[in-house]
Image (cartoon, rainbow over all chains, first blue to last red; front, side, top):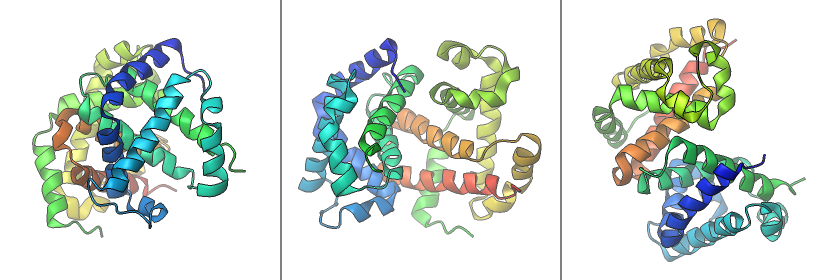
Amino acid sequence: MTLTQAEKTAVATIWAKVATQIEAIGAESLERLFSSYPQTKTYFPHFDLSQGSVQLRGHGSKVLNAIGEAVKNIDDIRGALAKLSELHAYILRVDPVNFKLLSHCILCTVAARYPSDFTPEVHAAWDKFLSSVSSVLTEKYR
Amino acid sequence: MVHWSAEEKQLITSVWGKVNVEECGAEALARLLIVYPWTQRFFASFGNLSSPTAIMGNPRVRAHGKKVLSSFGEAVKNLDNIKNTYARLSELHCDKLHVDPENFRLLGDILIIVLASHFARDFTPACQFAWQKLVNVVAHALARKYH
């Protein structure tokens, strides 16, 4: 799945806004994930998942910063996320279905915070981009 | 039978009360066709679907979106009997329309995103939870009569 130039631009434009609120958007995305899909909490038995917790905010930032790396290296997401890909394959082993769930929650968060920017074209570009990121993170699973 | 807490029912009906069914329905269906272009396979007779602009402005897409979301309203009105509410539509989608039930899940998630963009901060995680549950139940009911 390759992104067109227009799609890459759409991804970068929204990212510029998201980057100003990485912690808040990361935390909200995870909050939506754990709330709508409680089974995802099974990967975080060691976390305090209450709203606004330090761990939630920290982990949300971590996840979004990694997405930021993918945006910055949009022509080589595989290279940019190689280490993370191995981490997910060999250590974390998060079931692949969960990447779709988190991607959906990130889209909801972005849509709720930037409704006028989240046009159908931008929505399509981001869905495709997050799908690409998810593919890279799961491609070494077996 | 699905159990709905009082809070879930309240979150669903209060959001639904503010939804412009025609606008939301049109937008949800259009986004489905734009974000997941393979879903256009069911709408070959709808005319111009060649670009996001064409899709958003296509009157048949808008009309059909309104029809689909209006039907959703039946689920909201009959939260305790969604299974039976959709029995006939389930048979229709299987026998006549030949729609893969995966598409119900895709449309449900798109609807959630449309609601998030319309209601912004009011579409809280708790709201999303109740609506994810609803779209799941509807998708399940629509797939139930498949054979």
